[in-house]
Image (tube, rainbow over all chains, first blue to last red; front, side, top):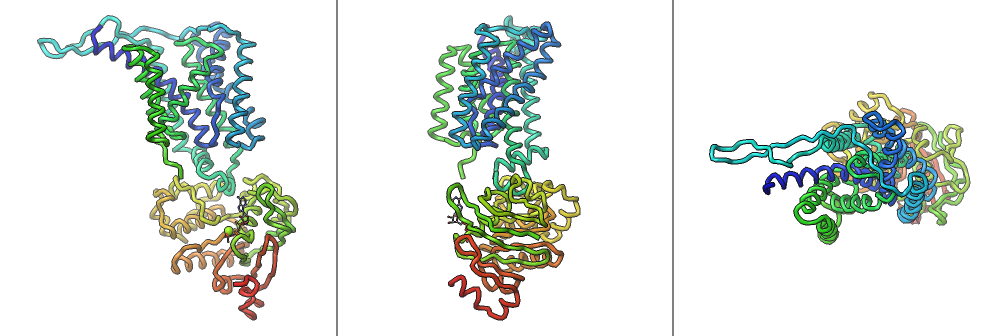
Length: 307
Length: 231
Ligand SMILES: Nc1ncnc2c1ncn2[C@@H]1O[C@H](COP(=O)(O)OP(=O)(O)OP(=O)(O)O)[C@@H](O)[C@H]1O
Ligand SMILES: [Mg+2]
């Protein structure tokens, strides 16, 4: 394949990674933004989404129905679990930043070991509901001017396109929720000044529980979307958490726009560097980028400096 | 009517209020005075349920609201203008007012009336609260509390750092609300303002009431406040 089409292929692969990463990281960023706590168990909700996708779709005999059911059920189950964890544990430690980190480390191991004990150590695939290979055209400048060609190997599956579309739609929905609805207004007021929000009748503990659940649901949704591409495994949450942290730090903690931009940056560079060089180099570059951001722009690309 | 009965409260192990008792009647302005650190702001936070009470009661028309979850207190009809305004600075003027409106599901007429009191805000509905001038911020803090449609209004140093015309506007607003029957608790440092507006003055020292006087006593002995405050 020539360089141009090859690059486009790498970009498309990167865009799929970016889409899933953006969903995952926006959950982490939302929780940090509103509650000012770090959810170390965030990656486990991603794993839970993937494992539940396998469980639900195999219970329903695979196929498109099973997958759609998983897409709807897994985020709800993961969200409900997160709300329960919030009300029974985080609320009791008063959302203290340090104690919350310790508490969510505990939650991480509980979820991971529960998955190991019930789902087992195997990696299991889930068949995508549809998976047509769509050939893509490339523009070539021949002697008679530009023309379309269809290079062999330049293609994407319909499922991967669906992942990008679904992530974009959910993120747009999240943005609309935050900026266009009363729920979003209440969440932002809580984020800006918890005490004053309470003095105006906002039940901040309920807001926190909802935000924690929503963050987990976003991670679980990312997990469901990824299983047809990458199998479900009980240890898959670790890398996912690390990448989410990288994205959230680069984008600016608590900034949804920054998170999406950083996810694109990391996802696309991961795709391109992995295809042309090696996946390890891609990870090295991402980590280097975080280090640079932390040194030169600690508030992140889109974050606001601490006031 | 708002009654504090012997309340003790503070921050964690630090006790600031030691048996504070105080009554705020409808249609009256009760001024709370005291030196810096006497516990005036702490008393307001205790009323709002933002600090746990170690003992004592906060009664609103006879109901003990002292141990309600904090967000239930304003829903009973208490509007709060915190010291330093504490606006939601990244939200717009309209959104700050909306937070007040949502508290008790105030009908739209409440906002119309508030904006008619502060027309400057009506011209700036889309502006971020953090970018307003100091005077406009105080108007917004007042307007936000009035959007709650309160029967009790707590004002913590609302005239701090304002120019005279703005102080007059805030004073006129407070007087108008009093005449409409709102119970008002006002923390105020400027003694001339206290003498001009207060129906009752309460002097706080070390978290308890040191002295009290009604309007007639204040007029009869204008030096009373100065003597008790030691200024
Ligand atoms: N968050 C807090 N944690 C610990 N102590 C506090 C806190 N806030 C206030 N205090 C202490 O409580 C005491 C009373 O403070 P408060 O703010 O109620 O005083 P005030 O009468 O409002 O003073 P000012 O006139 O300066 O506003 C002070 O000694 C103060 O240091
Ligand atoms: Mg004060």
